Length: 182
Image (cartoon, rainbow, N blue to C red; front, side, top):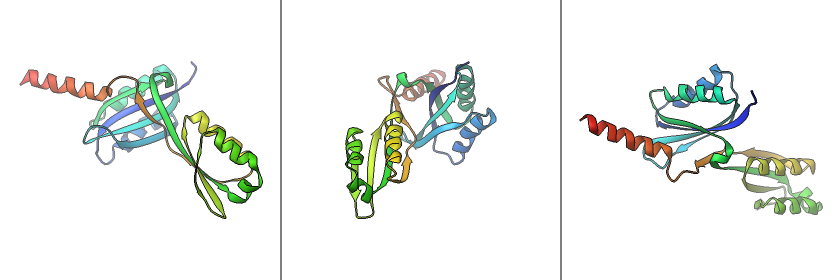
């Protein structure tokens, strides 16, 4: 089966050690995590983990179910790229000397809609927010000009294309179910 890049959105309580439990699921199944971003979500007390990994449909389904079984995990879902809005942020530190001597470097930065953050006599810092392919493209070009001194990029961040976060709907259903039992 062909492996595709999946994005998992995992919601959990903010409990120490939960990240280790989540990543252990991938380790046990020998699936490499491509990117990982953890932050507070739109709901108080709930954190959101955005994880990307190459997998096949059967394996990603099993991973998602296993993650959802963790006590402190509220909800987990997986998505293909066309089902979510995605973004990454990258910082590039480049040689100011090469930037000034080679006008193609600044043209490349502008063509990629990147932004100059700082320019000093030694280095210049460039910021790019965009899709993974755009970030990788700018990296490739800057590296080819031999001006790249440092580079880092964030993990993917993502929101679903639905009107509300699926975990909100899930939590509402759970609350409704709990009220019915009372």
